Image (tube, rainbow, N blue to C red; front, side, top):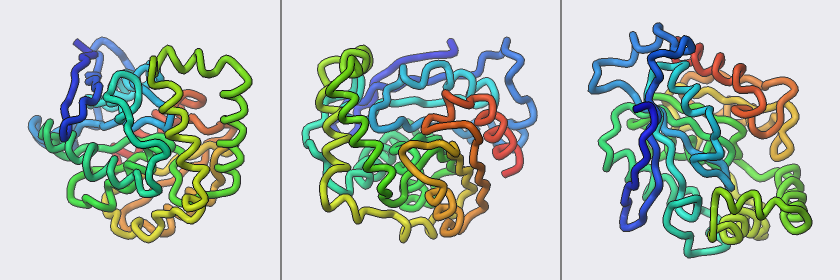
Length: 275
């Protein structure tokens, strides 16, 4: 079956997961890519890392489209405190919370599932986690695909978060998020907003870790991203050590895979077929 749900227990924490395999009846599959995927046992899995408020369902149909476009399986999972995964216990989160996501949960998931040559596909906070993982475990990922990553804190990011907090307080956004996060909705929202509002978080950055990234990296961002400027893309491109491809997607905001999915898929297919 193209989609299968399961639970992975990582260091005592249950994470909701889903595997999405290519639909062989779909013409979107790119037959050219598997030629550089290695033997069947080494064929990479695309690991999808969601944004600060994300869940499996909030990717919508994009994981299936990505699997079809690349001919590769995708693993989508919900971080602790999100969706059907175990609750988050510390709010606000520590300034260095990305380190736990990489070292404890992402690495634990890759190890427990014995995934070889994973391709990390992250959006927003998930993209930051993908880049940080590639820096901290440079021998593991085959490639990184980053959409709207943050590698340092900008005023535009804080302004966007403050606006999001007002929207959450004054609209029906909470009830819409409850369809995805259930009883965890308030906690997952606070884990995002309150963490970024901490004064100590204003000086957070991972620029000094970027040179440790040696695998190929595709860096994408919308030109109308309300949570980050093009300086994020430039900074990443100027500091990583491995092959870099970067694109600014025109007429696109913070969620390129939903706002401009065809452009994202085209970029990913070309990137993977040439790296």
